[in-house]
Each structure stands twice: as structure tokens, then as C-alpha cells.
Length: 544
Ligand code: VG1
Ligand code: CO
View 1 (cartoon, rainbow, N blue to C red):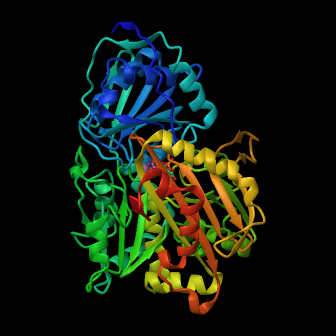
View 2: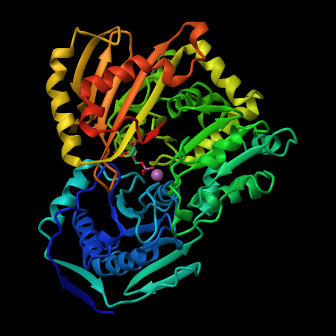
View 3: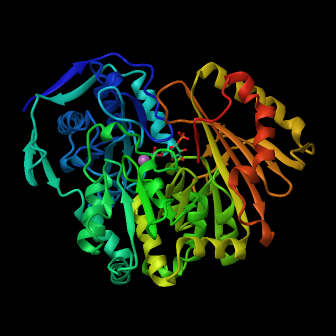
């Protein structure tokens, strides 16, 4: 098949954000738009002749079309083999697993995670490197630079692969292997966890579990692993058939968007464990009966109980969390005498720490937890980790977290999101607040003394690369923090994220309602940054 070189001109908006390039489907549907980004990606990788590429996505609208285009371009650019999930599907963690297992050169993941899907929804694309993790900033910057000067791309004459047929096909000299999207991932999970113990728990009459796949990619993974392999009762997995528009939902596993699950978990007959995952399967929410585990606490509890899980029995080398994630995991690291790391938002910053074995568990407040088993956050892995802990400790979720607070104290934590505010207002708010920061140090705010106030900058301890402008933070002498940053994954206006944390170790104050416990800091933030006065919003769009 002939390789064609197609002339094109740059689009000025192809800068990858926190997790790849995310735009409206209609933006991706512009002539050459997808092709430009794919060629810019390939051109940032050096010689790809003879290399292996993994391709798959979360199954949203435009997924299959994009997979066909990418395969035709990969063949034209000289890749020798592509490994593709059946029907173009691979959850983000499964893609990471497959890249590592088959020693691929890298992978392209098609996902806009939890952002709504469908013809009027969002689409996304990102490149992962050979360790299975998101491309570091050096590569994403090179991709953007290439996209600004691109003048042509390479593609073979239109050819279509049968994505539904497992097995080997050939495309313009490139081998295409269509694999089962679940098998490799399910095998890895069986290696990490005590499946016998989890199975005994799930088949116990007194134990009830509900997993909400939110009409997105984790349905087939959860059904295979929880119901088929581990014997959970049929119906444990709800909304388990992936739909190209995610059933018009917003598959973000949090208290607002996972409403069906949350309603059941806060009802009189609540199951013992509730969990949900997001559009591409890398996020997780954990709930007990009438109890919500914050993602920050979840990471801390997992770290403190890691010895219950076969893969982590021999100990953790360190724990890494993103900067806005609460400091609860740091306390566990301190007690275990292991390193703790604070990185900018986005999983790409954990890659070096995991590769250098300086962190075993990682997490973000945005419902992301993971470990060195792959290089992405991993929703079902986190659920299996909790099941393994429950199977060993034989206590409820709320008992386990309650005991954790008694031992370590509690980091009250909330995130307030203000979505779709005009970009210029959001940017000005950040500029003005940053200008105020130096004058805040030493001052009293919400009855607490400010210890530091800055714009977070991170120096990677492994390769010494510096990532600056990663969020404004105001830290108090008692450990409380206020953090503000703008989202790097949205596709409409700007999303302002406000993260608030305080620490409590008085035994009698461990069970307050979160928003009331943090009220003084919440009000102080509004006053300081002028959120209501500038945006006209009197309350956040989403509170997690
Ligand atoms: C958000 C989260 C961040 C996460 C990223 C990708 O980024 O805050 O923690 O890594 O989404 O997650 P931002 O820039 O919008 O705050 V996923 O599940 O959307 O791939
Ligand atoms: Co996601």
C-alpha cells in the first residue's frame, strides 16, 4: 500500500494539558486535526522504524474512527507492529499494562476520561512512553512545538482493519494484533492480590458489593474480574455495558456524578462496599455503608494496610501524592519510615519516582490511586486493594477509616470546583491572588497563622527537571492549607479548583461534617480570592 504525504497547516491549539489533548469532538472532526496531532507525536519520538505501538481507548464516540486513522499513520511512519484492544477498546490502566507486558515502544490512548461523550461531547488523545506512563513534559512540549510547524503528515492509502476480530492482520507492512482488552489486565490483578481471600469475601452471604461502571470502559473489566473470576453475585456490577455516549452521563466517580451508587450506599439497606470508576477506568471512588472515603484518606489507608496485600507485603519504598492531595498519606510514610513525595497534579509526574523505585503507591485527590504495577492510576486495582484489606481485616469500611483517624489524626479535606467560568476572569483571579501571596506570610487568616504562600514549583528528584506554576498554595503553621489552581483538562472556559485542608487529632472532633469543619477556611478563601465577587458564583459547581 502506498504511503501518501499529505500537506497540512498547523492548528494553534494542540497543546497537551494535564492528561493529553482534550477538545470537543467537533474540534477533532476538523480536516487534518487528528492527523496533525498524531504526526506531531510520532515526530517527537525519534526513529519509530520497526517499533511496536499500542492503541486503544475508552470507547467513546469517534474512538473507532481515530483508531483506524492512527493505524494507517503508524504503518506509514514505519512502526512494525501495533497491538490494539478489540473494538479499539483499552482502559487507561489496561493500556499501560499492555505497553509494559509486550515491551512496546509506546502507546496512544484515546480518552477524555470522565468528560461527557457523544457527537457533542469531548474527545481526547495522549501518548504513553515505554514504561507505560504518560509522556513527561519534555515530550508533550515537543509534540506541541511540532504541531506549530507541521507541514505534512504520512498515511497509507485508506485501509480498514477489522477491529472486532481477535488475531493478526496486516496493514501496509505493519502487523496488527487485535487482543482481548481485559485478559492481560485481569492476569496482572490476579498476580497482585489474594484472589482466594477476596473470593471468599465476595461469596459470603453477609457481604454485598456494588460497582458502578457508569456506562463506561470498566464494565467488561469489572464483570470479568469481580463476577466471573471472583464469584461476586450477578448484578454486583451496574451500568456495565460501555456506551459511546456513556448513557449521556458524566462518568466521574464522585458524590455528585455517581448519584445512583451514592443513593444506594446512603440508604437503609446499603451494601458493605460501593465503588465506581470513570470513563477510562483510571479513577475510583470507595464507599462503605453510609460512609464516603476521601481519595486522600483512601491512599493513606491503603499505604497503612499494604502488608495485607501479597504484592506489597514486603513493604513500600515510598508514597507519592500530588500537591493538592491531603497530607494524610505523609503521616503514614513518616510512621513507616519511608520517603514521601509531593508532585504537581497529573500522573505523568509519578513516572520517574516509580521507575526509580522511590515510590510504591501514588495518589491524587481527584479519585486516582495506583502503584508500581503499571504507570497510570488504576480504578479497579484500587477497588481490589480495598477488597483485599476488607477480606483480611474483617471490619467495615467505616471502622477501618475510623481507626485510621484515631491512630494518625484526620485531615479534613474538600475540593470546590467552579466549572466553565470565563477564562479571562479565572486567569485574572489567579494573577491577582499570586500578587498578594508574599504579603500573607505571617498574617492571621481564619484564626490561623500563614506559614508560607507561593506558586508551587517542583524539581523532579530523579532527572532534576523543573515544573513551575503548578498551583497557588497558602500553608498555615498548624498544617492547614488552601490551594487554588486552574484545571488543565477542561474544554469549556476555565475550571477553578479550590482545595482546602485542615488537620485534627482531638479524638472528640474526628467525626464532624467536612464542610462545617472547614467553613472558616472556605470563607477566608472566598474573601481572599474574590471568587463570588469576580465570578458571580455563590456556590461551587461540584464539591468533592
Ligand atoms: C484532573 C485532576 C488530576 C488528574 C487529571 C487527569 O486534572 O485534577 O488530578 O490527574 O484530571 O485525570 P485537572 O488539570 O483538570 O485538575 V483523568 O481520570 O481525567 O485522566
Ligand atoms: Co480518567
